[in-house]
Image (cartoon, rainbow, N blue to C red; front, side, top):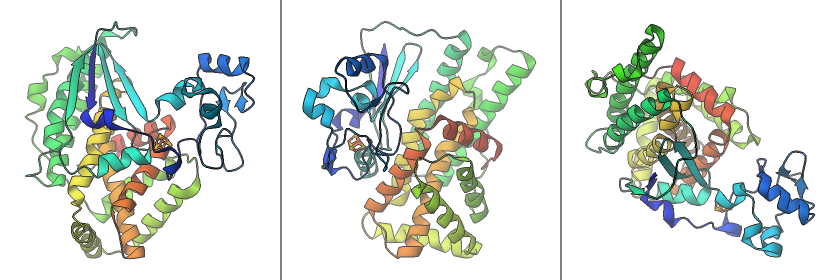
Length: 360
Ligand code: SF4
């Protein structure tokens, strides 16, 4: 079995009671069957056995959390008592034929800090482990995954090429994936085999320009109206951001972007390099997963939109508070990811929206 993961993957350590946004609150924690049976035998009373989930208090905090934010279950029974969700988070695995792609969820504040404070290009490790494939795949899934891997292997260095502006890098990537999507759609319509698609040819696509205007940001922010939210915080931030942007002229918008970038640069934070980290995160974690829902272009645009959604929130924050720092970038990024990546309806709605609302 081939395993691929970013090299920082093994450096993660949960900061537990020092965490500003624990993963033990705000969303339902589902319990796997083995753990549920363990809890039943131990007569653990913080479990909703019908829903296979932990009970929560009125603030949506897991009922196992004590006053210090530590887990009473671990305290009483040791780490082995944990269900898969609690044991594994923030580790995420995407499963493909003969391949496991591992990532750490950026919705965890400590992971967000690790990813966003890294100013270098992310490096990925590939290793073989002796392990048998346990899943079944269709032939189509095998072929499309191979093609998406080829595309992503090309996209990663393009996205990390700092001799180009971020807009130029995204324009190249989106132009290529748009053509790939068109060729897949053509194969489906004409009942042609997917092997007929030449990735080498797709990569020669003529690049269309990407122009980040206020109108475009307003359009891509509108997808947030279709999201379901576990708590109102991010929804209110989105509303405030959109209202703030509406007050700006096109010229004000360009100036606001420039001033934000300069304010961060004074603290040694290069905004394009930080947004690159966000992009690489979403690209690696989810692009190849589009093999299962066929929104290849929508998924590629989702990763780009995530960067501009977060930049728009930073613009609003800087406009409102007149100050900004890495802690703000980290906080808005994990709040954003908490609402997007742990909700299948939100991911699907965003992929579909970004498929229809083309940025190039
Ligand atoms: S969100 Fe991350 S750092 Fe915070 S408690 Fe969960 S795993 Fe630990």
